[in-house]
Image (cartoon, rainbow, N blue to C red):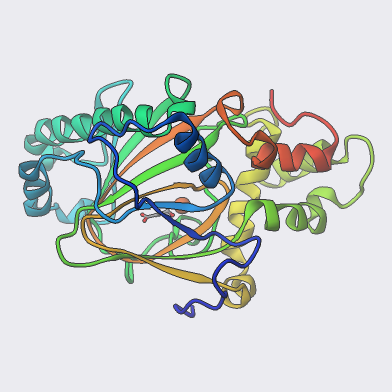
Length: 317
Ligand code: SIN
Ligand code: FE
């Protein structure tokens, strides 16, 4: 895959970088119009970058994470922290000794992230569902994975086992690697790409009344999943995620932007509307927030609104 930008800066329909250049108090407090500005940029498919991450992880915790030895059997996994259960997943029995330390470190990161964003993105405060946090200790360059699990292929995020039912996926990343950047590619946003995919794909083959939902039912049969297990919106997003990764020509030909997130930087992205791939980088922390439609400042830009406009009916349950 080409790893150079092939898109001129500010091309409509593509994600761009919004640098946070203004100063703000360490707790992240922003005037409401600035908070709405960043929320709107994010919802429009842009990447909001803090060249120097807010202080969300104590230095000794970063040192502990960087110094941690990963057992061979788990060498291919990211580590997840589930705030609602205060539980770590992705470790095996031989690593139980480090579980308590990891849980404490990720719990602290998760709550500090939520506290910071409740000020910085105040339109969403108190309305989100705090989803998982993760520690990503594996070098992404050359990382082996099943095709659909590969993150070096452009995709929109979709959670196959945790439907969002229209809530949006906001992710906050911190590159804790002291020396290496984390390298991403992005391409068109969902607003630009999604409608073409929806119209061209089999899902909308026979347009009419509830063709969309009928299409989803047949897709569901093909995938051997009982319909109803996922709301139509999630079924579509999952289908789209897989189709993008499985389409080698799309991956090769689609115009791309290349981004380097330097050591110590942090960035936020709605990964359900920013098509993204990670090419290189090791040691990142991440926290996911599920933002309901009712909290959005530009709900008309959301993937759900875009798709419902085409379908002509509701896609959530
Ligand atoms: C992804 O969400 O596809 C991976 C992003 C990353 O780990 O940098
Ligand atoms: Fe992703």
